[in-house]
Image (cartoon, rainbow over all chains, first blue to last red; front, side, top):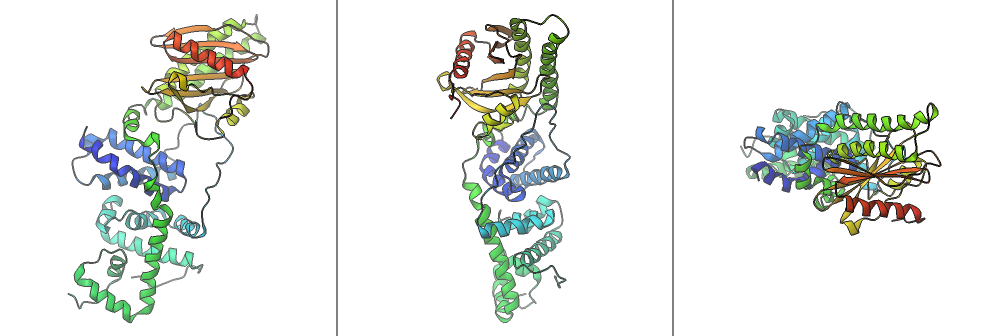
Length: 163
Length: 261
């Protein structure tokens, strides 16, 4: 078994957690993780050491961006879609608040906040995952936190002296 | 260094537990002197705990089967065939439906003829979708609406017999378009990864046939038409096993209510 394969397995729970927070829908999230793993396995010859976790999260974010752009929409040529919407997941009050707050953040801010708080990544790692300088991570994090604060406090967004 | 002014970055690092030890005292005394800033940092921490409380448990869930590494490894090779497979199946099932449509223009084919044609079509569908490893099915077996959904679309009760005695587990199902209306394809998987599909589509109301066997390479299919429904059971070309499965399918459609799981 290759290094990549051995390293992938213990990362699957964290990838699922992160994907779930990103996409909110369990099915979509697991699709994202599956695509990430498939892509990593196909490209394992491209991985020459380094942080496997960072690499996987980078793949996942790229796939998620593609998904949101609708570029990776699956062909439904031969498949008739069900019209019934899936049942909404139940959630408690606070969970819903934070979920709604996350949903209204710009994607890059949501990504940074989740990488740091949910995945416990260092700012350096988050910067590597997003492929941006560490300063960009810091300003995204700062903006995410202010926006979330305003959202959860029910305040209207207002100008603030940030940084 | 310990005396330099506290920056916004350091406040975040402090909230995230990432602040170098030699700066902790400076940040803490700064926060002690600025209640507004301290409240801000406390809120960031509360946000982080709310996020972890909401999503943290996902990592404790059992990994779904399709995300288990062995399955993903198997799947990693099949993705490219997907588009071709989907298009081909649409064509083939459409062609079988086209055959059905001919009974309006020429001598109507007998039930046996149709069963043969359907068997060939389903054999191809089977071959394509069992290799379709990433999305072999559209709705998973554990979703309660699988059978009601397929039944509604096919326009007749679709059932999924319990094939545990054959070592087969229901994976789920999907719809394929046909010119006589949608066909339901349900898929089972054995311990060795072998897949069996049952295709079910409406036939003209009084069509009837006996079991027709078709084999193509290592894949075989049994087709028959009964009470206005055409069935095809396809899988590895083991005639005896497919015979047994076909009889189970036949039986489950003869027995009302047996699809309630």
